[in-house]
Amino acid sequence: MALAWTVPADTGGGDQVLVDPSTLYYSFEVNEGFYADTGAAANFDPLTSLKGEDPYYLTQLTHSDLIVGHVYTYRVMAANLMGWGAFSPEFQFVPRRVPLAPMRAPWDVTAQKTRETIFIEFDPVLDNQGDEISAYTVYIDGGLDSDTFTGYATDTTLSWNSGTSPAGGALALTTGRTYRLKYSATNAQGEGLLSPEVQILLAETPSAPVALRRISIWELPAGSISVKWDLPSDNGGHPITGYTVYLDGLL
Image (cartoon, rainbow, N blue to C red):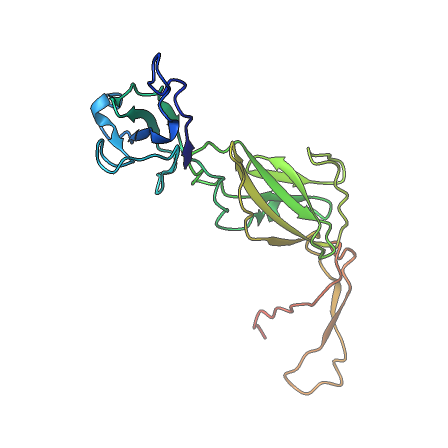
């Protein structure tokens, strides 16, 4: 936290020649709020040198190693050769940062996904860096493995289909494409870093193959069987990549 203050309007010269502002020195103090009576004057500690020791002539100071979300109260007073003046009005500051990046990527809710709809969920960001999370933004690309993403404001679930127009605008999904998604959290300080990505294929499982049947029974050696089947009538929106044949083990 970088702090600064102005030279007092009255440097203490009265009716005589004003005291040279460059000769003023300051005691800058902080109440870090670790005491039971947080408003007590005795709870302030100097950030500059103790009064009367090694005078501090600058009008700015950096306070480091602050605790995110903690309340700090500051005040400053000036001195000339006649002694110390009154304290300034107090100034309070609560250090905050943008939220941390989510720990993991969104995930595909397969039970609610179709070949026209993506439905995802994701974790809330628990470390808000001292300021309440005000929004989440989910980013989705165009399904063409590009680095062009569109952001959509949401809570911790979001779905898209050809009939919806979320806050980020209408999104035209194409069955069979693989979409990349990631998300971020926002507080009053701004938007945090993005989560890892998830890749979601916009497709469903294929329908069952049909007409499974035994073939070439006269050309096979003993103990062998040969079968074939017809392609599924519906590939789920994406080309079939393979088949699995199950055998019950009975004779």
